[in-house]
Amino acid sequence: MNNIQDLAQHIQPLLQSLSLAERAKLAKNIGRDLRKSQRERITAQQNPDGSAYIPRRTRLREQKGKIKRKMFTRIKSNTHLKVLSNSNSVAVGFIGRVNRIANVHQYGLKDRATKNAPETIYSKRELLGFTNKEIKLVEESFLKHLKI
Image (cartoon, rainbow, N blue to C red):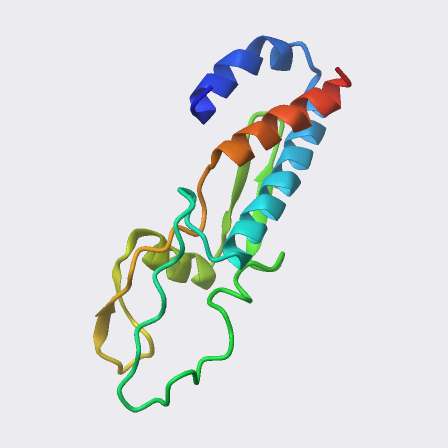
């Protein structure tokens, strides 16, 4: 199984046999597991393909080594990284203003750091995405729920 669609086709017959309440509970558990996995990957500063995030740009006026904090330390908290689930779907993502900031980094778009700052093209840093580890995690969560 190389991608999430293969996994979905593989477990679809078993999923149909569950009641709506059981599917909702399963979706909630899978969402929590996925959020935890995404948070760990963001903490490790890695893209889904395993490559490291492109570091912040150096500024001319700042001293070398002035930035003490890793990128995205607050964005990965439960306040900003939300799980939305029901009996038919699971979604892990960012909500509100944080969603706009995350999209700029996810896709490498233009944005302004502050209201009057010049537009900057941000490097592409994929905050959310599926790795083989996450696909296996979904499969294991599903099997654990079925107690197989």
